[in-house]
Image 1 (cartoon, one colour):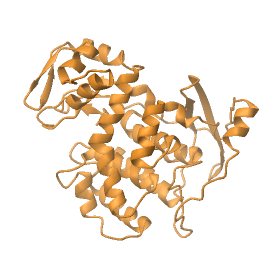
Image 2: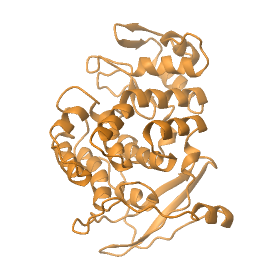
Image 3: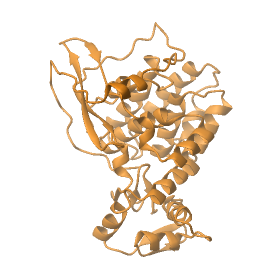
Image 4: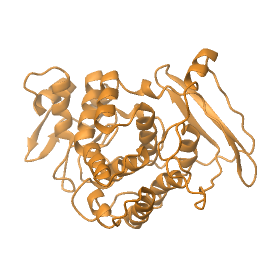
Length: 343
């Protein structure tokens, strides 16, 4: 769980233009394939309308920030356009293949899932900027680290995943016998285990500096995704598949709940919310119930600062209502869903 940003996001713009900067060949290549049909769109459930101002769309491969704008009037959205994005460029080849093999979702789908996850966590769609994030946010969970908020542990987190992350880092770096201590050494940090909790002994500034230095480290990024998968993604995919659900939106919704509220355990965890969401085999019906149940608790137990939690859930439910369940060709829809003010 990350620190919730207090950065304001108010913009009132009536007429905005689209800035697109990409080659004709790349553009043609990007849009030459067939468009996948959205799953179970329902005409009698209208998409939630929100005014869109501006959001950043990026291509990390080219390190370019492309500002995407929408054109609106006083009452409704008239059009949304987005620059061509190389979604796969946000993942290493090995991570991309790992995710495809284990989740059946591709780079475009995972990129969109991570944008939806990172908006309420860091108030940004540029989730790849946070591999080197580290902060003690004062929630008695120790240090919160990386793109999914691995923690070193504390009184509110006696089963942290931070130790697993450092062990995975040692493994991804080539250690024959990976260990937490080995991962810490590779990161340039000092610390030791106290039961299940990792206690870092460096100063706050050193810890942040050392983790930040790993931002572009390939082994660190690989370790981040492997730990993320083992801790949250694997369980989320299993819970979707056991119900016969396979869409990116459902899997992403479960992953977001798991990393925000815990995968298993008490009534607020993904496991707990699922247990109260009914037994419908219709994916849209089940997920509608799931969002309703999650909304009731998402701003409690320090999960989120109100009303950020309700808006967090609304991102996913509005995409469901709009029929954007596969998260393919959904760049504009994701921008719209994440266009809310983080308190």
